[in-house]
Length: 66
Image 1 (cartoon, rainbow, N blue to C red):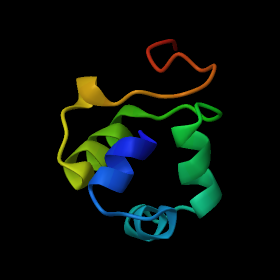
Image 2 (image 1 turned 60 degrees about the horizontal axis):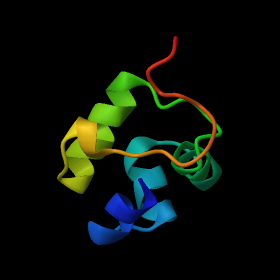
Image 3 (image 1 turned 90 degrees about the vertical axis):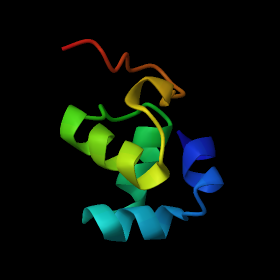
């Protein structure tokens, strides 16, 4: 997910501002420390110009688990 953000030309601050969250929240999403909910995932995909199935999370949270 970090690669998608960087490839799209965004910093943590840019994404945090656009989504109304903190930089640390975006960082936790990227490292798999916090679950990335579907509505936010859709916003990120739109922002980064990628398809949802192309988002990969580093870390321990399986994004498909409920």
